[in-house]
Image 1: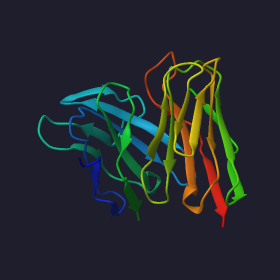
Image 2 (image 1 turned 45 degrees about the vertical axis):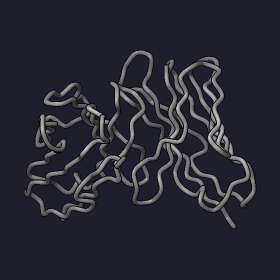
Image 3 (image 1 turned 45 degrees about the horizontal axis):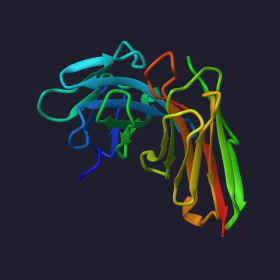
Length: 113
Length: 111
């Protein structure tokens, strides 16, 4: 039973480009969460999605950031017009039930030049 | 926003020693989760606690859900080099649903 999968593991973008991060939850999990982690810090919640619905996006910046979890395919976190401050590790987690134990993917490390 | 205070921030111990770390909150939590994160990897769930007073073990790890529902501790017995990493406590507070993370305890083990 594969765990949470994220790709790419590393992503380099220049300022102004778009970053697209993908997450495939564990089999049987329909709840997906995105977190951001800066070096030497804990994880900060960004957004919680169920299939085709955004449940809570209170931790996500209102501009440039968007997330989706379509009926088919992975969840996508999209960052438009990236800036240097977007450089961080972005983790996806999934759970079988709402707000239940969450299982994390290996993360995508975004570097903005 | 909700904050979890985790201590100590870092520990440097000798192999074979026992380790204790804790997490406190100003508000009640209804679940406590303990994760370990290795460098360059995502957090891995170690132990989940659901009831006040609950004591749960996973191998050399033992965690407890505080009676007041505002704290939890994690103990590691007879530490080994592969215990090195950052340990995070996390939980959804009673007044909300989102998972809040502590700042982490960085554990270093000297062989």
